Image (cartoon, rainbow, N blue to C red):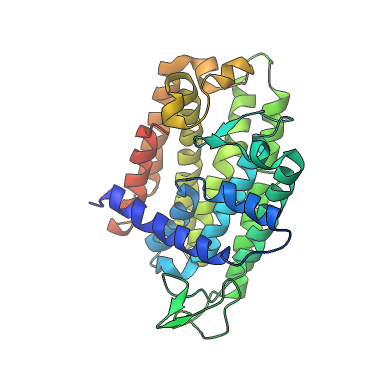
Length: 322
């Protein structure tokens, strides 16, 4: 059985180390660079990158080979939070216990920081020769991130096949755009103060949250050159886990505390958002989340112990308090 806390810490440190290396060199204008880093390093759990790494491992790969592609998911997730917090959207003052980006840098710079993070994510995904951890040194030599020289600090063996990388980039673009996360956010705004509707609610959650989580699982499998059966199993795991993740978020907004969440609670109710607790009650929502987690774990039954981290992560997500 996987020690899930140790596993999550290990993978989070890999992602954080790479991201710090990638953004270590300042760029102009400096305020934009700082605004990007401010939200990116505000204390995220790196769940989406970790899911990509775990999926890659489940399909027989060495997770360190796809650190850039996994880390790029965090840039997309962070951009979405920066924009969601804006006055025109959710108008939040706190995120992860800190002032939101627009409170620190102003609305215009927060918008631009989000735009830059989203665009840079696709730049990051094209890196196919990442350095070895800790990403800033090869032996005693410093290397200059993010543009590593061919053959310096890279992994031995084959690099990611361009055809697989293209599929992964397309997968992420589909999940992040109007057919995925952005579409879900738009429907979320449209549905404020509307009569609760189960179909609209499922559309919001499947697109706003589950789409990028599902894509995280899929790109891990795609980059590993998985079989069709493996990809289908990980897709279903991702969709069910992603939906459960958002339901837990809805519940935490009702039952959690500002200290746990690092942001104000009860905002969904104040903004009259369509959520699982508002439609099914807290007990019904919790039962639905548990059911989805159980289904997700069953979906990856075709894998043996190499998928144990994914099984443990599903359980961890169901019990999280932040």
